[in-house]
Length: 182
Length: 384
Ligand code: SF4
Ligand code: SF4
Image (tube, each protein chain N blue to C red):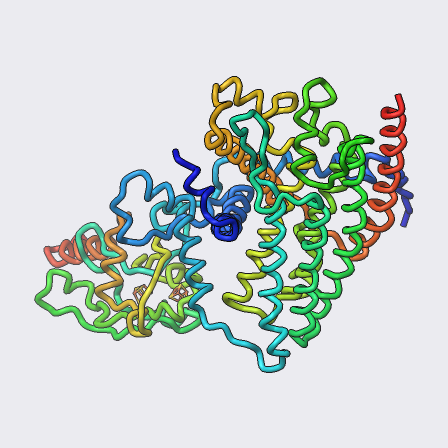
């Protein structure tokens, strides 16, 4: 390995007294003293949440108001800290959504366990579970920190849907039933 | 305003009243410094600092209450209340008597030195300048040095009585540091008093006379000693930082290597007494610096209090000139305290060996050389 000797210049007298450096430092801190603050006053001023932020996981509905989750439980299995508990349920046959067949009866995410990894969102075949922008969770008891199904939908709201795959499936079935072209 | 009523009171009562008044001002001022410190550190670091606390029953006042809230003054009151009412445990392994004595001992010199420091002056009806001071003694500066250096005993006592290693180390460091810098400090003010004490006149070490000799007519007479003797002023300033244990010389409590230094075992009110004492020292030290090197209550170099009073047509009124002088003096002291804090939040702490080296190998020779040079120059000038 080639060795490059670095020449060390002896300090000048001014440098050895530190005084010019101290004055320089004082100038710097004074600039900061009069400069505007860099902090936010949190509860009143909220930070701007960047796109792709992984906040609290939530369940969403499609634009027609249908709950998208079909309780396939993939997210329950993938969740590394086992934060999700799903009780699958049937959709009543007289419901307009009957063709979707299944929906969760209960859906709990324990936010004391969740590590905000986003794997549930990644794995969901229905794009039903989303980590959105909410970042502050508080509660006085462990029970309060578990988000139940109604709370999950309340937090999640409605997201646009590009596919409407269940509607397409129903339309295709209807077309087949009315003398399809096969 | 009728002031004769006051002057007809017996002397002991007057002195007691004045003493209480000064302490009543100094103590909260020292406490307010702690809030100023927090605010200034916050601003330097780009934060707003404490600005939330407000008692609900004051929140309705417009403008004033939010302003005080933003400045953190209610926080200060809350902190003070907390220190008073908080549980104040005494660790089991300490020497109880000395442990309790130490913070009290810290307060005594801190509040005593103020007695000989003039904090203003007024022009009496004859046009003479009379100092506003609790005890206008001839030995002024000596008394300040003598009493202020007693404060090291409280630190040593606290460190020793705590009976654990970090406070002990803090106490030892404090004693070494204070002794080292006391020498340079004393030597640095000698040129000032050499110059003040013209041959033939009565000898004096009073701080008031030091200010008076900076308010004479003429180019040299009106000049502040900070300009005439910059090296003295500089040495005094550095030694002052060391004597008051301020950054970059806060060896006795350097929390990086000594946990909290001499006050590691202290809490609540006793702890706060140490801090108030430190700020009192800072205030008195700044006051002495202002008196010696920055012209005391004279508004500007070459503009003495009498001149200003003449311009403002206040010359005949002792009360108004007194208030004016006190305000000028306090303004300078506050600016100086700001400088203390500004330096604290700029410079990192020195290492212990650097502090010792600076004190003994740099500052002490420099102050001796400074003394010799000024002694020769003053001798030559006065012979001429
Ligand atoms: S974000 Fe991760 S930890 Fe949280 S529920 Fe989804 S998969 Fe589980
Ligand atoms: S959220 Fe998605 S992955 Fe989880 S059960 Fe519902 S459909 Fe399946």
